Length: 313
Image (cartoon, rainbow, N blue to C red; front, side, top):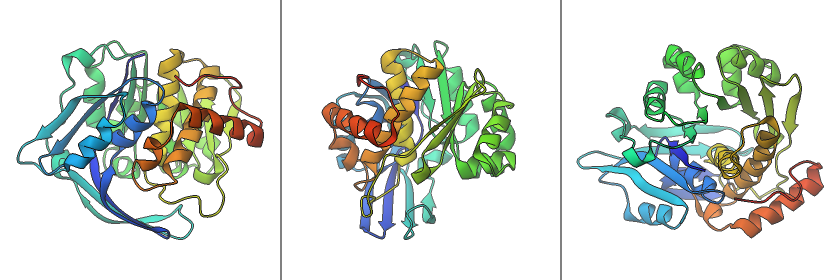
């Protein structure tokens, strides 16, 4: 059941049509770990500077399932910071500033007692760093990665090497198109399979997600969790929360077969829906297993899909 996540921990400033939040806890590692901890104990590996707010540590500590012994606070360095503004449809955004800070330095080390981790998620960061992290985890049975447009543009060869050693890839539809020059999400996913992964999950925002798996000719399509107008406060971290719910479920049931991945996508979808209702990690923190189960029942009724009677954790 050992699940580990590596990636970024940041300080976010977010503006949306519903409001703004200054200096909230962000980063791929933070959202993933918070989401996954509702399903299984989660090991976090990340690095911040000595300007990292104490309340951010308190936020992560409020999730009892997160093991922070892989968190490095580096003296004299600055924490990664990001600012963005979302437009009316909440699907489009502009980056207002990015301060890489500690991300321009050497990556954190994986503690020796984390080396036996079996389920691995490589959150969004430079693919060369992701490769280096993966090499330190010889006991892995499932390794899944995320990426972004920046690395597709400037580190394409490192990405291709990464795709050759991971089992799965989670990307959004624009990234899948950018990687393959294919506009159709299914066609793009199949092209990515040719680069190495066993399966690809393409996230399509309010239109759900698509799974293409090497061992099946069928395509699995899952709708998004239904959210009424005004229900989206801040979409930041939704994709990382989706991945956290997905990987958390797989680690908790210790399965990697196609049917288990189908179930995991449903849990990931409802977990992401908890994130978007608040700024930062407040939405994930305010939910619990009972809340996740209730959402799953609603999701099944709305979409006629999902693992009926499945357990969280």
